[in-house]
Image (tube, rainbow, N blue to C red; front, top):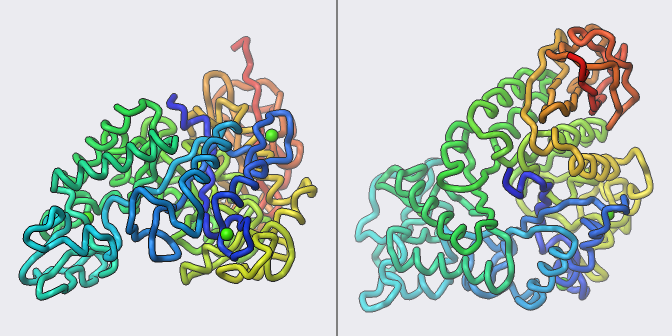
Length: 502
Ligand SMILES: [Ca+2]
Ligand SMILES: [Ca+2]
Ligand SMILES: [Ca+2]
């Protein structure tokens, strides 16, 4: 298996993670100071999260708070710190066994980028670096939006908004520049790979603006070139669509992609108290991908936080965490999710300061005034309150991430959806060789007694509890009941011992 299947990743919005100098804006130094919380590098200590990968949301120089409109691809956002400070962060992460991938925005730049200011002018070297027309074509974008924006009597294409003009990736010069930029962050700053923003939108073919053959091919060439720099570089695509389309990019165009379809199906099942959607999605996933070659997650920085989608219910958040951290693939945790940080759009409210303490205004994030007020759940959704509580959401994350790092079945195993007669139960078997882990989730707020699990194989009586109440031994492998009554929103992770004499 590739190295990334050993990992659990953590998505960080730098502006909101940790502020070292009191200006209310998170920075590289603050993030470095908090690395031991994420992973202290010592496998014998258990009071860290033990994550082994970080995805840094954009850190390049940008006029916006979020950074998805870049003005200089070889400079850091000054508010976050210097390149040396970022390099130091990555070095310190590596010492702790954490790989770091960076957000790379290839599809578009800021309209304030000098490339764009000089583009469209006849003698400019970046004249054709963006997509220009004399007259605006009559077609619109994927979501019905206007995509042709006027400047000086000409029109340029920008799928997201006028401040983010799409780069012309049919230009060899633009492509060469992107390769060079990527090589800089890999070679000079020691990044381990990239999360490619808006990857399905790279190259348009007239009104066909997504998933074009040119986009697949550009990505495949780019990923190949990055592997030429180091075979260990991870290229992970944001391809926000259905699972079948997402999977068509893997592995020829990108190494991995986020599984939006699976995440949607799981949250839909959580909200319906019915496992149907996630069962169907998981079966589809198993048919679409090679084992483990996708990235499951719950929600990211573009979606209402999972805690809010679950109505602020901590028991349900535990069920979601158990699902994510036992699911096949390379799981991504969005910062704050591990303590139950909530938030609904607008976007700033799903990207609020990391709640380290219950200090009402600053939440341990800053000594000054935070750039954005914290979420109101900080009284209980914070690190300090949960860190010594063995039953907290944070402890569940710590326990399961640590267990995952020791379990071949969870990291490398296949997934079998197990039918039960109870529609509110989601049950899967994760299997690698003779290692078997049973995951059993009650997605509903009801007691479940009328159920049984057909393990589909010979197992000896041994049933070792990894998470949840102690299960009964296996007496009948075709009708196993770990407990007589599964309580509302209860979750179990059980290691089964297979018989050796069969
Ligand atoms: Ca700061
Ligand atoms: Ca540790
Ligand atoms: Ca594009």
